[in-house]
Length: 293
Image (cartoon, rainbow, N blue to C red; front, side, top):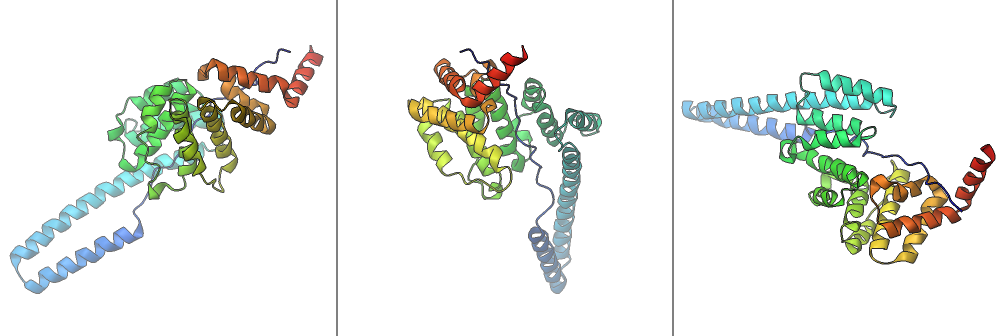
């Protein structure tokens, strides 16, 4: 029986909104410290102390102004990304046009947003764009998201060594990124599994807790990573079981192992094709195709 590989798509990481706004607690601390310093300066009556506190106040005010301007830029980008949340190509094109023609087109936050939007339709262009900006140029709170997008794009193009390098820069234990950890862990696990660290990949997947949001999508990505890890660990029976589980959900998921773009190991491709050819849903699809001819 000759069964065609199911259709597959190249999915990009969901748009990760940059952090916007100061935590109120931080602002309260800054205000409290400023008030305390001025109270002390006025109490001393010293012109020198008052001058020093005044200088510090000007510096803090300048830094806060710069920070608020940066936050406003981020909010504008987030609003544009949210406008493309429907996922339609037209919505993404419109959002890209807004970002590309804006005065901050070369800003790292803008570049990251554009790369996210481009990833679904042209992963090569998205990767070229995001690689044009060194990782250190992105805001610290965004660097893990940038590395995550790079990792996923590299994996989708079969560039596993580059995916591993990007994945190893991601801090999975950052307490401020708990919500993003499950997706990040599943993608990092795939990068590890495909570059000689299958045991570590399986151990990482064991620590995952699926969130309420996007649980189905993340579970599929985690299962894909498990297939790669089981295969790399020479656990072919377990790898076949994971492939069958993926096919039970949707045979199109097997395209992740059959599409030449992903450059999957030939033996794993063979195993995935065997699962596809024996799966009832694939047989039914084949029967329908034959009847239409």
